[in-house]
Image 1 (cartoon, rainbow, N blue to C red):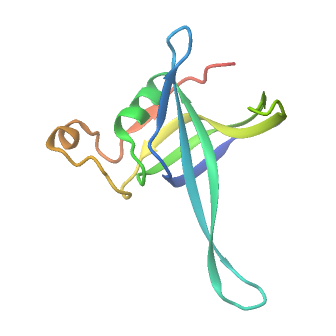
Image 2: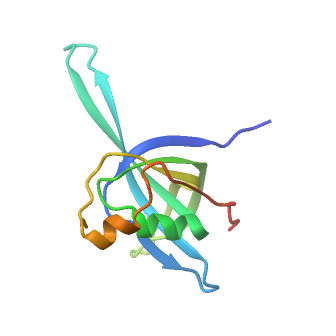
Length: 137
């Protein structure tokens, strides 16, 4: 038996990027910073390490993420790891590993840049959770 499960909490490093496939399915990419405190074994000093994680959401989850999340907002993500191959602008073959989100939960924290009354009234409570069935590639 194998398990492919990723769970993380982090802050968005930039606003979500929403696109649609040729068939109209929403797909949203998120760049999430997951921070960890580490103690240097030699100096004994504590340092902060940031790991950047690319998260891809599909369907309703993608639309909700694009509508309500902004840079700095904290989010809880559950999903699976996926590695895909692509060709970069220089014609080089590359691989990218990303999390395909199956569930997002918007948490407290972060900064809401767009603090207009309309934005505040339409935003879901911080504990809202959005789940989607994974869409195969």
